[in-house]
Length: 305
Image (cartoon, rainbow, N blue to C red; front, side, top):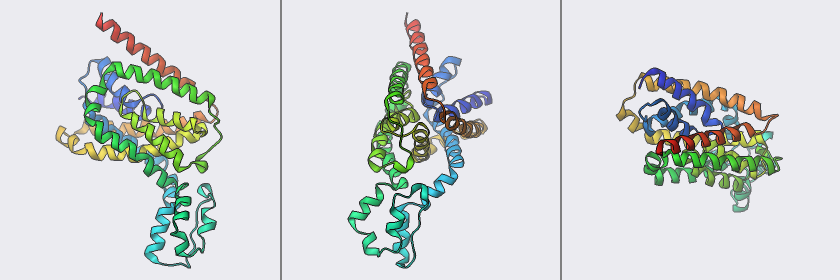
């Protein structure tokens, strides 16, 4: 693979990973358009390391807050220290009355099953972990299909189009009043179940998670932010799983350049996507998906005749 190809694919991965237009679909289609050899799933995953770096850097403060305010983490620390006099605090953004309940509370009260369920329902770190599980299972069970059958351009065309219709519907009819402080475990599980569909190229991981989050009542920016945060463990897991295959295929300068470019373009995509959604809707992404789906389907039809 030439450096220029790696740069182009890195830019495409970085931008499309966080826009609801399917990064995997573009990574399959672009090489076909330019007549390049399919770089394979391992290289796609390598570029995802770049977007992982981007989301970790951009949301570094959020992740610090999420981890610091996690009920599970506080419980484990409190249990290990066995210190009942040490108050437990929580940042206001993620405070759903948990801090006031935990401060100075007896350890037995904190460990009660009722409180355990109550606190975990609004523990964002726990929600993200649980919401990631369906995607992990789908990746393990359907990985062979993701590398072969699912990379069919006809499937990508169909999923691009259907995903556009769903996103348009969700953006128009949803309430869009909730933010991350209103996120519940139930909402996270629902989003996570649909995230598993993103193993099919064209569905778009960010596209399907944003769509479902909108239908559950999250604001446009909050839906996108939760989607981005939710991408962190799933990208990390996929990267670790495919890393041995990447090493076998050869970790050279072209791949490293692609990862770097992916990280840079991904960071900019997150930044301007969130800024764009402050005052605008998802119509431009819906239109792009439909146009790309029709163009791809027309190209396939012409090739078969």
